[in-house]
Image 1 (cartoon, rainbow, N blue to C red):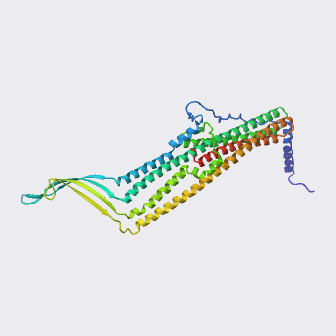
Image 2: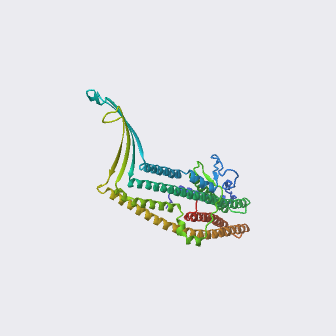
Image 3: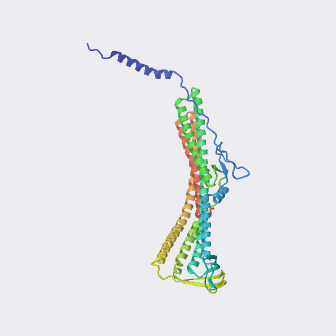
Length: 465
């Protein structure tokens, strides 16, 4: 007879399979258990209100409340206290010191000298002493370059360097002001994104509560409740991501305004832009008002002066010295009081090409400055045109985004109503929620683009700060 191998094992396998099949039947026989509801969402903490009094409110590190500052005050404090501006201001002091040194080189210099000589014995012939054993002499020397074209040129060049340092400081202030304004607008944009994400999460949570209540009443399905809960969890993650981005923006703004705490935006600036046609017709004159173009022009002017003064290195120099003298005791050859005057004349004849090489270096520096100025002016005109185009495009995007947000909100309301009436599925509601959230976020992004483009236009025109 043919016998089946391992009959006991086969029997155990059948019993196990029957047990596995019986588990779903038992599960279906029991009423479905609703998923545990998520914790109520925290209230949004990004609403801004105008507070009376000081423009900067005290921060609470324990509560995590950032300091709050107005736009004008933020720019003002950043320009006045930012370390980059302080470093640039120190460069002005350095240039002033160099100018003072260059001026001192062409002004009278007074020096007092004194000498005491002690010998082993006096020198003389008989009773007549020619060199006493101890002699003290003193003199006051007054020296001044009488003809020094190269040194005179260095004094004027040092004055140009001071003007360049002052213009450079103004350019650093402009850059800090623009960076602060951009950071301020980034805080506003990040806060708008947080608000849109919080609204989307609250809407999803309300739908989840409705689905959960229907499930508890036996009229809904567990799948619908789980899908609604999934949307809430995903929206909660997006809220935290948006809040982190807002916090980082506040920290960046705090660093720029020299605060040791994150700083929040207190108000929303309004940038009035000039009429485009009139501005573009005078764009060449307009860009010359920018601090970076002024700085480039001064650098070119200073380099041109240095090159044009190179010929003075070949001129002679004359230095005069007047020196009253005093000696005690006096002698026949060196009376007790006397004076002397000296004229020193020098003519550079041969230096193996040192001055010629210096002139070539100066010419190369001038060419670099001229090329940089030409490129900056061309870029400045382009920035103005791009900024106007960006303002137009971004405003159109904002109008479309706001219309899309309104339409998405209406679609969500209709879809939610249809779901409750049984004419739509829960997936339709979830999709409408996602579209509404994305549309609200797009509005926040578009609003920021408009503000940034207006700021860029004023910066390109040299009207900010």
